[in-house]
Amino acid sequence: MRARVGASGAFSQRGGRMTVGQPVELVDIPPFVKTFEAHPCLLSPSAAGIQLGAVGAVVKVLPVGDVAVRFTSRSLIVAEKLLRPLGDQVIPSS
View (tube, rainbow, N blue to C red):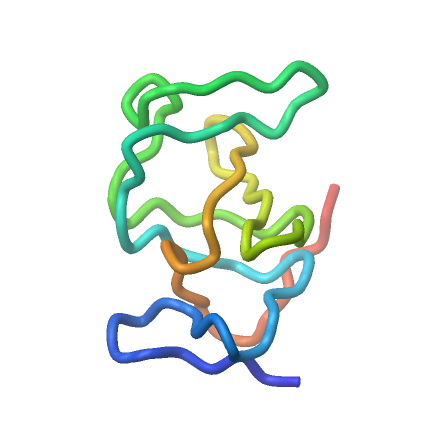
């Protein structure tokens, strides 16, 4: 199934779901982000080390439109609507 991308470049809520390993780009910065760790915590985007346009790979698809994304600095839980897909290639997990 192919994901539908809206005018803003973000995934449509009714469109397809992201897949594990899919590369994505952050198109909007949330006020806070939650880490995807054994002991999660809330961080500001600057403390989490992410900026607008940050590129990462989907680690896990979560319920209610959230996904865990591995960025350069760490893995974070991000709302699907804040992400834009980068092609159809899949980044293998290491």
